[in-house]
Image (cartoon, rainbow, N blue to C red; front, side, top):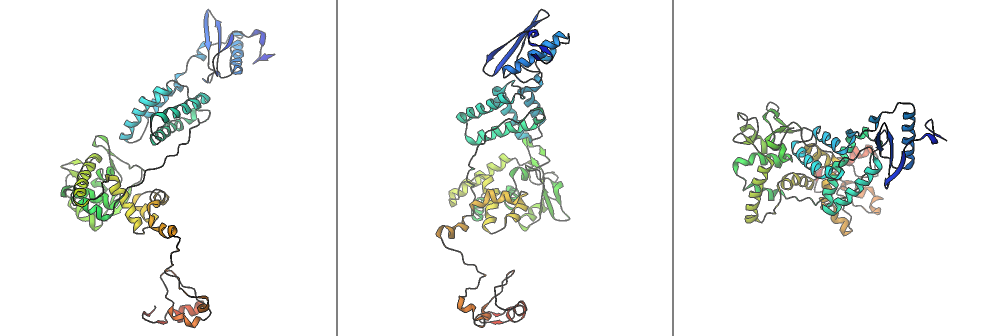
Amino acid sequence: MKIKGIAIKNLIGQIRQIRPNLFQFYFSYGNKRYFIQRGLDGVPLRTRDDAFQIQGYVSLMIQERRFDPKMFEKDTSHYFNNLIRTWVKASDCSPEWLEKRKRIVENIFIPYFGDLDVRDIPHLNIKINEFNLHLKEKVGDKYRKNLLSELKTFFNSISDLLPRMPRFPKIKVQKPVIQWITSEAQDQIFEFIPAHHQPIFNLLRYTGCRPNEAGGFLKTNIFWDRKEFALSTVIGMGKTIKNNTKNKREKMFPFIPELEDDLMKTKDDSSHFVYHMDGRPYTVRRLEKVWDRANKLSTEKYSTPRIRLYQGLKHSFVSQRLEQDYTYDQISEVLGISPEMVRTRYGKYQTGKLVNIMRGKKKTNLFTPEFTDTQLKKPNDFKGKMVGARGFEPPTPDTPCQCATRLRYAPIKDHGTIG
């Protein structure tokens, strides 16, 4: 019997199992002892057959005087800790998230996965599963899902180095209920927002933008001749400007009466920020403090619900417009997201459409004439009572030509003439 061109009797060294699913091949060469636990691809020797193949390869190389000990030296370039640190340095995420990512990597991922070779997929699957169980005992489901999602993002970025992608557990997390308030409640809160802060809060209220987008609103994004403006930059950590929004989409808006006066007052301002505090931009934290203070005062006076800035403006913007029967498409154009995302995130909170379903009553179609079968057999009894509606032609026994002439212009009692 031969392995890779060498007879079994000529094999050198020994094979032993040093722990479950890990074998070691050891031998002496040139007055030096070698211990090999990984193949040429860096993957640990999980089975005796794996170790047997390496034993045959090394024996053949020694016999042909081509053995190079360096081929089995540790290759740290595929170690988890080295690769993930390189990934963090190359990240193009926002400064805020980059700081969070660094903390997660250094304090959570590296202490757990260490110098694990990422090409060792079987071992990696075990470690990921153990990591998930470890998190389940320490943190909530939402944070656990976010951590595993971040870890998966890293492995997706190095997929070219892997023989296959490791397995990740699927975690289902119920999203928290969206809180929102009516326009009347917003008026109560705005009553206590100082006048010099009102313009930026009006922008948040009437565009549904994020607080960091309002804080990063620049003069260069106002087109005075067309009376339009764009929200395409955000304020980041250290009051720096980042040149893209969260979903990397610029949003165009027209001047509206509720915003035009505030915008025109900034035209000759020397600051490159549209809304600012003596040249200093509004940070998200500053906006939250102003809102919380006004919300507290309105609660004391009007019993207005306590609500956070994001829910009180952005979530309320969407929910109010859905209550006013604006479509998902119309709202998505303002928010810069897909109609499906609007429907999935906010549609479930429009409970008015569920009333008749819960009560077991069918809603009457306002455009459907209520005629009995007997009346339908006597068209002359109801021709004059039929009223056309925009975009809708009621059913009629007459021909299309007759519908377009006699019925459309027929006099109707108490309603004058249709036409």
